[in-house]
Length: 375
Image (cartoon, rainbow, N blue to C red; front, side, top):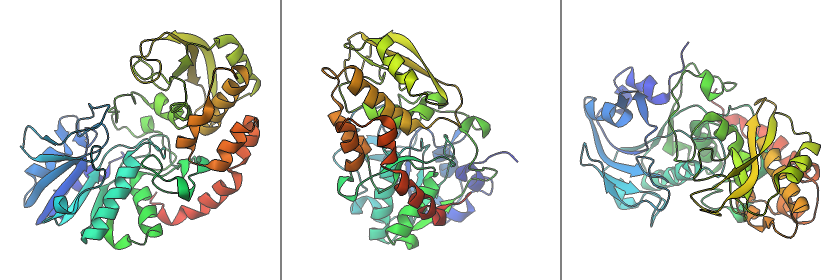
């Protein structure tokens, strides 16, 4: 049975579930029915459905911004696009006035700090407060729904990159994540999920038969998405993760790095599922933009064996040990969002000991997420 997204499943019956409704639509360029038809176009063409307002997440409704996103107008329909990554990150009450529902569709990556998960939570809050439903047109988790890794966010460290107390790699689709939010924030009345069909949580994205569309400018392929929950932990430090190169999240480095001793330290950790080779690159964006960086290129060799967050922690601890005068890990606390884990890094613990700090929390997470599972 071929995999169909929630949007494709509802499109097959003419979006009958939405007939007679005035809707807002939170979406980006990944919201599509097929190669030639966007979900917005399908909704506009459907009988007795009125799309009133569009909302764009980080990177915008067209996936082209890498900074704050302004309010825009959708050129083919002249519908207003309210930015949810500008002065406000939550739909304003006035933006929801007159709507019967808010529809949400975009491709997630499966990591807590990929901000579409936060936009989802804030939209659910806004709908609950306004008394209208949030309807999530679900899509697969591209890095499977089987694996969950990393520390849970501390309640006192919640932010736009850590909306809820979930692990870094959460193992849920956005529909399931919305269900978890609704259960734990006591607003189940405000949520409806259009589930995928033919999808099982063991699937990687390239096993679904669905086409890959970059969900953000730097997320260009499934291997980058597989590495992202770990490699991105370096992003708030004095280090480049390859933004502005042809291989974001697949390369990492800095001008002060010497590749050979770093790779030797990484190989002593015997990480399953990944290999390293030396490389040089010059990022065009973010840290060290325009400077030549020495570092590593990472290749996933066994994706079901790779623990991406363990990889990310190991990158940090080996850099701390090999380049103690140059590498500053202090910024990693922002995306780790867990003080106990960061303290283990700052205290000189090795990667194995750092990863042990979240073992009990992940065991609890396995039980905690069960009521939200759809697949």
